[in-house]
Amino acid sequence: MPDYPPLSLPDDPKLVRNITHFARALRKAGLPIGPGRVLDAVQAVAAAGFTSREDFYWALHACFVTKPEQRLVFAQVFRLFWRDPRYLEQMMAAMLPAIRGVQEERKAKPAEKRAAEALLDGMLDPPEAPAEEPEDTEIDIDASRTASAEERLKTLDFEQMSTAEAAAAKRILAQLQLPVTPIQSRRLMASPQGRRADWRRTLRQAARQGGDLQQIARAKRRIRWPNLVVLCDISGSMSQYSRIILHFLHSAANAKGAGWARVHGFTFGTRLTNITRHLHQRDADAALAAAGAEAQDWEGGTRIGDCLHAFNRDWSRRVMGQGAVVLLITDGLDRGAPEALAREMQRLQLSSRRLIWLNPLLRWDGFAPKAQGIRAMLPYADSFRAGHSIASLKDLAQVISSPADAGEKARLMALL
Image 1 (spheres, rainbow, N blue to C red):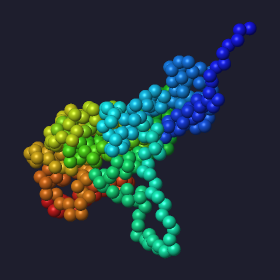
Image 2: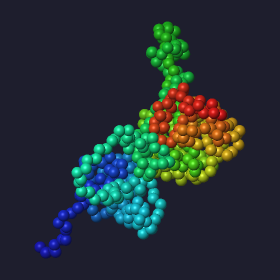
Image 3: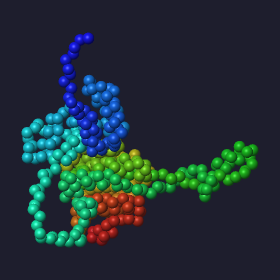
Image 4: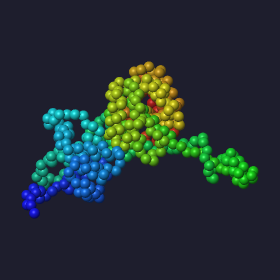
C-alpha cells in the first residue's frame, strides 16, 4: 500500500461557524432564518461538497430562501460575505466620512446597502466613552414631562429627521395600514336572508317545477372594495416627504387584507409618471429604486395643473371608475394659471369618491392659504390634512373611511 503525505488540514475548521455567521447576517437583512435552517444548511453543504462555488451557493440558497423577493438580498449578502470583501470596505468608507475617498466609489444597487449594514452591524458603533470615577455626589434627574424616543419620532417632521430616524420612521410606517369601509354595489347576489325579492330567479325556479311557485328567492346587494389612487408630488420642495410617504404607499399596496381592491401610484413634478407596477414588488428598496429610475423629474420643478390634466385625460377613466379614494400629496406651490389648476382639481374631485389632500405645510401653526395654487385647489378637496409626520399619517388612517371628515378645510376656507 503506497504511503501518502499527510494532509495539511486545519485543526479547527470554521466552515460551520462561518455558515452560522452568514445566517445571522441574512436574519439581520430581513430573512426569517432560525436554528433549524442553519442545521439544514450545514447538512446540505456536507452533502453537496465544497468543491464548486455554484454548488455551495445553491445549497445555501435552497435552505435560506423561501420567497422570490428574498433572492436579491440573499445574492448581495452572499457576494459580500463569501466573494467580494472590497465592496464591504467601500460600504465602510461610505459610512465613515473620515476615510472616504480611499476606495473607488460606485452607486449601490437595490438591497446592497441593506446587506452591508447587516454584515457591519455593531462594527461602526461609536467608541464607548471612558468610565468616570464614581463620585459621592448624588444627582437627581427630573424625568417628568419628557417623552420617549419613539413618541418624539412620531411627531418629528420628516424633513428634520436624521438618516437613522428616517429609517426608524420607515419601519413604523411599514406596519401602518389604511383601513377602508366596503361599498355596497348596485348589483345583487343571491341570499336567503336578503330583503329584496329576486323575481327573475323566482320565475326560473317556478319554470323548473312546472309553473308551481314554491318559494320567493331573496337577494341582497353585493359588497365591493374601492381603489386607492395616490398622486405624490416629487418636486424639490417635497422630496424629503415624498421618499418616506412612498415607503408608506409601498406597504399599503402590499398589505394583505387591507381591503383596497387595488392601489395605484403616480408621481408628478414636471410630468406625470405611473409607478403602480413597481410598487407591487415585495422588496421595498427594489420597488422604490425602480420607481425613482422611472420618475425622471425627481427634485425638479412643479407643474401641478399640467400633471393633473394629464391624469384626468389619460388615467382617470382607467383607475377611477369604481369610486376610488384619491390621496393628493403636495404642498400646492404652483406657478401655473390658477384657473386651469382649479378646473383640473374640480374634475378630479368629481371623478373620485373622496379627494383627500395631504399638505406638509400644515405643520406650521400660522399657516394660511396665501399661495395662488393653494387658493385654487382648496375648495375642491373633500378633506385637507397635514402629512409631515408619523402622527399625521396615523390620523389619516383613522379617518380615511369617514366621509364627514374635512380636516382643516373649514378653518382655512374662512381665510380665503
